[in-house]
Length: 280
Ligand SMILES: Nc1ncnc2c1ncn2[C@@H]1O[C@H](COP(=O)(O)OP(=O)(O)O)[C@@H](O)[C@H]1O
Ligand SMILES: [Mg+2]
Image (cartoon, rainbow, N blue to C red; front, side):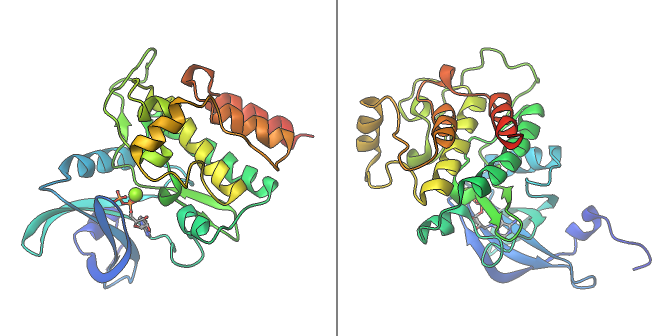
């Protein structure tokens, strides 16, 4: 090749290998390789019969954002896999089975972070979400399965934008959505209890769940088995307890995991709170 290939050029040439990096509710993610340059990427395969909407959303959202803590987009294409039409989203390869595990796999091993480390990771996540939100995009599916953490660098990477909400304009005062999206265990009370929701406030709840997971090595209500039981538990409660952490951390968790969305902290409030702590 006489010049460095652009991501678009590479997209046509990546070979999807049989190595599966991970699986989610809508997709299978394979390793793909560009045979000449040996560049390796992740190829997320979605069925266009059942998940065309998620494919379109993920491509649109990822192509709009550019942030060190959000997985980088490397192009997309449609192709026939095993006789059915699939959408492929190419992304930077994350070492989720090695140095960059998902928070979900860390929680399975009950791994916790020191408060200072958790705050450093949170700070990057706040920056990533602020960037997404400034582009009018709410993630809507922030959870431990969709966040990898580079353990040596304490660097988180958010991915899986298939359920994102992409606002047509940046102005979003009074926005209320009703389509319930997400995994019950991680849903904010207003989503779980079908009260209508502001997707940007829902993302703050999701960040709160990630922070809770990092501090406690578990997520709230992890012993609750059904969605109905979860609804009953959440509707009869007004907040989670935050034992065995500093008063500072308890306040931060309480602000992010406020059951009432109008009392939940905004990203700017979280940023100011972290900055004040770091300057002391
Ligand atoms: N860029 C990537 N590099 C390596 N593994 C990935 C990457 N993106 C996703 N994965 C793995 O694939 C799994 C499913 O991907 P995800 O985008 O969450 O799909 P779904 O929308 O089906 O949940 C993830 O939990 C993760 O283990
Ligand atoms: Mg996922």
